[in-house]
Length: 51
Image (tube, rainbow, N blue to C red; front, side):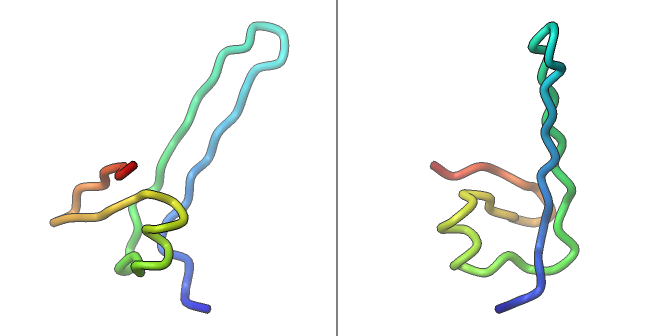
């Protein structure tokens, strides 16, 4: 198992249903295995979702 490369935080306000999602930029390279699981790709410091 490698070191975690990035994190995603999400929340939903129960009464209104308001949602928020925040992504933290990884500080280490994302492995191919993590890309396959998360769909997150880092290229030249830019995070994109593949999928």
